[in-house]
Length: 443
Picture (cartoon, rainbow, N blue to C red):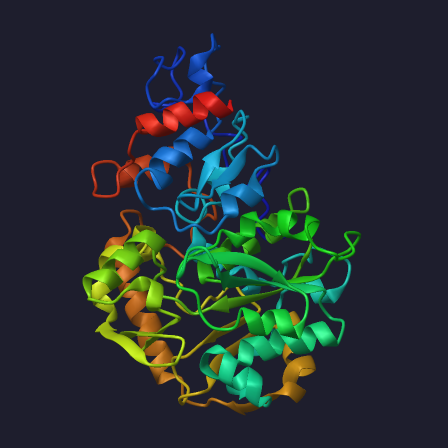
């Protein structure tokens, strides 16, 4: 491989730099509430980064984008998901392996470098067949597409192209299931991860959900609860660009097979996701009962909310809901989802069509198989898409305290992160007392 670190993306094996978290003696008891501080412990070994470090730098500082990468990356299953907040949390003793840090797109993973993986000629396949290679095909091709089937067209978002793509692959036996986002019945507007195994199940989840579901951290739980043969499952993973970045990094370094079930990645073009409770509050502030909202859509910078009869309840500039957005989204320059096999969004196509970008060998194969169910046309002009992508990159460059460097090393050490972020409005936050109690109970 052209770039294979000795351990994981952040090259800590040779790092001898001391920091506040690597002292000559044990940490001061009670500071930050790390469960390791509750016992008589020896000094931290050099080169380790603990979940507590990720927690303070990303989660407590409100920069978590809820992609689930840290949960998937943890080899000891020490990281779980707080179902109340939708964020990662420690559920058993942290081993200090550093992998949660190394693969998080908001800490140790230089996500802009991940977007270049597919362009490198020496990238290894993660399995023996070429369907898993994820290498770039002859060229990236952009299409306008919609479902030929009227029911799917009506039920899906922007013509139901993604739903059709997945359904055709399922029925052709190319995948066993697709991890998509649905809406929780007990909490309107809040997303949940769903493993769909039929066209009917895909149709039931059709449409966009604007809150994250931590789906990358739920793959194995979803598989275990399904009837899919566990010996060699082949799944499509659908998610925002940050979810796909994490999956691509895990697949690239292929640690312990976390991404083995992923046979195809589909990125949903995105400039921001929303925190569920804050979004509900913002909609209520606009005079609309969130419980009455059946569907949300974002088009041309406007958020639309409609009821179950299709009547428009709300039409407001998306910037009105900035305070409801996940704060870490402003650091993302990857609007299109460049690490995915296929990307999908509404920008650049006529109404009732989806813009689809096909960029890898396995993406091209999936597209060919699904084409019989799609009405498609090649998009020669992508100015609208490029304009939004350029704006998104500018926002990220202005927001990121660290250097935006697509040619830099794929890993960012904890020390380098602290050097860039300390003293900024995205500085780390110590663990709050509620989480300290939680850690005491669970560890």
